[in-house]
Length: 261
Ligand code: LHQ
Image (cartoon, rainbow, N blue to C red; front, side, top):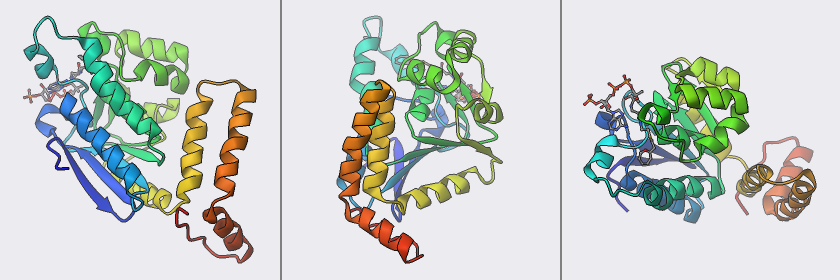
C-alpha cells in the first residue's frame, strides 16, 4: 500500500512511522487513521517487524482532529460515526497489535492526537513537546481514549484538572506525573526512542506480545482474573523456542538470540 499522510520506513526490526502533514500540525483525518490501521496490519503480518516507532514531521506531533476537514462537513456531520469508524478503530488496532509501539513525541500532542500518543506503549518526548487535551477549548468532550488513559496514568483528580482547564503540560512535567516515560533534549529524544525501539526489536516477540496482552487485560479485570490470565499467557510464552533459547543463553552466560519461534 502507498501512503499519503504518513511516511513508513523499516530499519532492522523497527517500522518507523512519521505523521506527515506538517503544514497542518499533523492533524488527524479519516485517511490518517486508515493508514495507521494499514501499518498495524502490515506489521502484524510481517515477521521481520518487531516494534513500531511513531513520531511526527515538523514542529508538532499531532494537533488532533483536522478542524478544517470537520468544518467542510456541515451540520449533519456525525461525530459519533466519525469516531467509531476511524479514530476508535485506529487506537484499537494499536492496542491489539502484539508488539511494542513507542511514541517519540516531537512537539504538541492535542485532542485526538493526545489519544494517539496515549495508545502507544512507551512515550519518550522532546523538551519541546507539550500535551494538551484541547477538547474543552472547542466545547468538546474527550475522545480517542483520552478519558480512559488520563485517569489511569495521572489519577482522576489530575485528569479532571487537565481536561476541564485544557491545561498544557510540558514534556518535563508530563514525565514527572507519569503521562510519558521520559523527556530528553530536543537534539537527542529521537535517537533515544530509536535506541529503545531497536532494543525491543531484539527482544523475544512472543514474550513481548504476551506481555502486551497481559497489560491490556489488567486495565479491566480483578486480581484473580488477572492471575488466571497470566497463567494462560505464560503457557504460550513458556512453550516457545525463544524461552528455551533465553534459558540456554542464561546458563551459557551469553546474549540470547530470539527468533520469534
Ligand atoms: C491545525 C490544527 C488542527 C487543522 C493546528 N486542524 N489545522 C474528533 C472527532 C471529530 C471532530 C472533532 O474533534 C475530535 C477530537 C479532537 O481532536 S478535538 C481537538 C482538535 N484540536 C484542537 O483543537 C487543537 C487546535 N490547535 C492548537 O491548539 C494549536 O495549534 C497547537 C497547540 C496544536 C499548536 O499551537 P502552536 O504551536 O501555537 O501552532 P499554531 O496554532 O500556529 O498551528 C500551526 C499550524 O497548524 C496553523 O496553521 P497556519 O496555516 O496558520 O500556520 C494551524 O492552523 C494548524 N493547525 N491545529 N487541529
